[in-house]
Image (cartoon, rainbow, N blue to C red; front, side):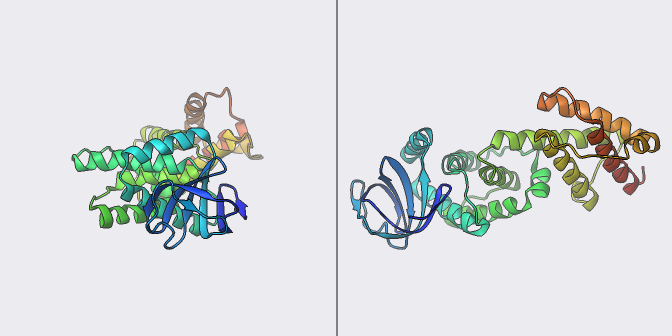
Length: 293
């Protein structure tokens, strides 16, 4: 059996597996060796009922393994309240995303994304839409995930007749992105909030409103995101031009110092290296010059 992370591909089952749920003709949830596994194979679910056995030696195209006991319990709870059609749709898309990325996704996505969409669809059917304050940042920073989220939204429209607005696509993209980063959705949201807070501070200090669709914005946001990533991972960049930047770009360095305080507060850290502050100041200056301020 070939396994990469929590994804197993092109395998022959080594043991009998008991059917827990048949989602459609091509997707089964089974329990084997104490673990829940989602099997993908054309025709494998046809006529299958809970308790049936998928015999040892059966060839399957792909398997997602749910190993964590909390995830198993939560997924079982989802089975009791979420329409099978939605679960099958999401699982098919997760399989497509895994193939496209060529990488494993954290198993939390099987619980988190389905649960989110279940409640999101209920809200949308009741004409209740939650605004996504990080939509532009998500589109800019996680473009690939947003594209995948848009495809899932199209499938939901086609198969469930529910229109998924742009803000919800952003939330779906965050689930996909977090699954690529060991399931850390809360951190992803925190970093998007932090990036947005710095942008808003720069806008306030320069007395401007930045065009969220502009190339200048996309470039500046990306630089901020990378700076945050270095601070979080404690991998500061070496900047030999600190003194020059402080002397030449006084306004931008002052804004960078203020932005440092925002970062420290949100991330609950004591300090940021002067090299990193100068690096941020350099990008604020480039942005300031590009917009003529």
